[in-house]
Length: 208
Image (cartoon, rainbow, N blue to C red):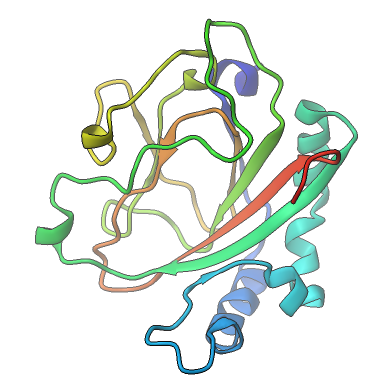
C-alpha cells in the first residue's frame, strides 16, 4: 500500500557493515579496471560491476528481501538490468549552496497522464553505504509523483521544492523506488566520499 501510494518504500538494514566494508574496499580496483587506458579522467560511475566482481556482488543483486519485494510489486518475471556503483566526491559548501542533484524519473518510466497507479516496468533498489546526513547529502523524493502528471522545468531541476520529502537512510538500508517516482540526491559537502549502489531491475521482456 505504501509503495503504490508514495512510489517508494525503505527496507531497513538489508546489508550489514561487514558486507558494506567489502564493497567499499573493491571500489579503487574497479575504477582501475573500468578506466580506459590513456583516459584523461578516471571512470568513477561504475556500471556492470557484477561482471567484474560476480562473487562479491551476488549478495547485492540476489538479496532475498529485495527480490521478494520486487516480485511483489512487479510480478514474477524480474531480471537484473544493472548494478551501478558510485562514490560521489565532496563539493564545497559554496558550490552546493541551495542546490540538489537533479529531479528525475528512472529508465522505463512513462509520464502519468492521470492519477491512476501504473504498474512499474522497472524499479531501483538504492543502497547507501554509509549513514546519510545533511553534510553528505540525504535522499529527496516527491511522494505520489509516479501517479501524477508532474513536469519540472529544466531550470528547476536542481531546486528544492515545497512538495518534496527528505530522508536519511542508514548504512545498509535500501530505498526501493518505482521507476516513475520523481526523486533526487543532494550534493555531498562532507569532505569524504559518499558511496552509493543502484541495483536496477526491470521486467524480463525488456532490454538491459
